[in-house]
Image (cartoon, rainbow, N blue to C red):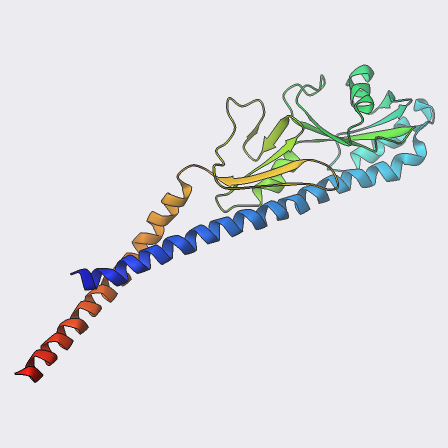
Length: 244
């Protein structure tokens, strides 16, 4: 019986090793791909900053219609705001100008917020060029980031951190607890925008995948084990006959 169990045990050990390497590699690759994807989403917002930059510093009544038209024609935008001396003075949304100015004064390039007065239940992403004065702020709804993360449909949980706040495909910092990412955890920082991507599998995921694979592979391993026992039996039988 021990001879027949050797190929079965060896096969199970190899299957477990290959599964762990697969999950580890997928986490590493997915985190890098997520950075690329989110960078592109933020890059589209940043392109709007460059396009509107010539309007920065001009009187609001002269440029507000142009700003509103740009927002209307850009599905990824929620609002555009002009700043001067780090003070917001012209905006396409209904948020108070002092509230918007706080981001301008923060010196941050990007920010995740959940407290926008005009959108109290929404996740909002903000972007600016901190050293431009006069400058522009662009905002978008966080669902765009969630949609980018939902493209990774392979069991891996991806989470974005903007300073001390986070967002992922099914929730954000307002949830009672963070999603589980304890298995094969990987993290990397966007060199362009400074946010952090964390990828990992929930607790028990590897064991669950092993069990699923086991149902598919075990019958074949058992057959190999039985065949090994049969071959060994034949070998012993033939050897015994030769001795006789």
